[in-house]
Length: 180
Image (cartoon, rainbow, N blue to C red):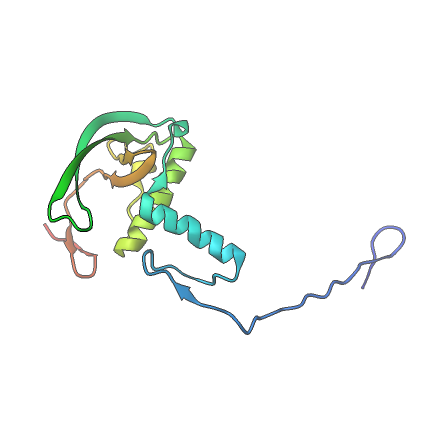
């Protein structure tokens, strides 16, 4: 191909691409997180590994995000265990510190992380997208809260302002118009 512009014409170099479709394409569905991926493709495998980790352990929420701690709750976890050959089982108690954080709407990193968490939660629950009021400065009373355990987000709550009440059909998530 010759391209003509100012001065001397230049020749551009063509590059041939090859599409290589492997006959050994392997589709795998993770029995835990239900993600479908090809374990033979390194990018697919690494995306699955991250998603699986986030799905099972929660999405990372570290102190570097700078979110404001609203409340701290101590949970007491009871674990029942029994050893092989023993008829008795024992119960151990473990306490964990859970922190509730409120999101700063002006902190882009926090907002982005909340959107990542919401995407995962809404996909898993097959839920409709939220109104996103929690991230808009115009809606001062709308907020987002994250529940954090061991630097992992394990819960989320977003709130919206209520300007007027509306009816919602639970089965199809549609709003009934002009209902008072």
